Image (cartoon, rainbow, N blue to C red; front, side, top):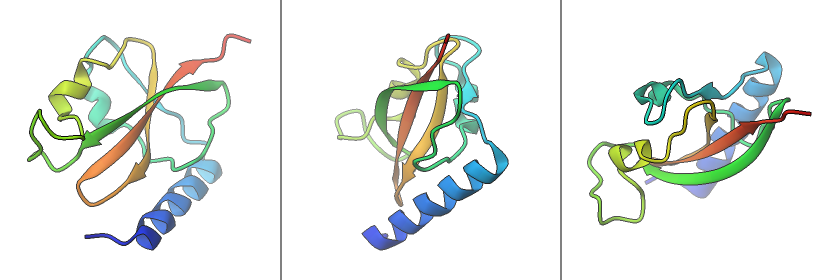
Length: 106
């Protein structure tokens, strides 16, 4: 199991990389877009032009069940909406938190 310190360090590294490289969320091309697997890991980075919306707790191991706290990937796909951005904001050994973003129209 990963320690909290390890998870925090990984998140900070992801945030720094996202800042340096101006990494943007993966934009879903349709509802349920399976391309979401390519969502970048950005930690706490706030990409310009995006507003934070929902956060999803998702199993990343492929072994989670539908009755567990973390959604299975298939359950998560039911929440993926066309045109919204998605990025991993925190990753543990078997689960990730995925931030959903909406483009800022201003």
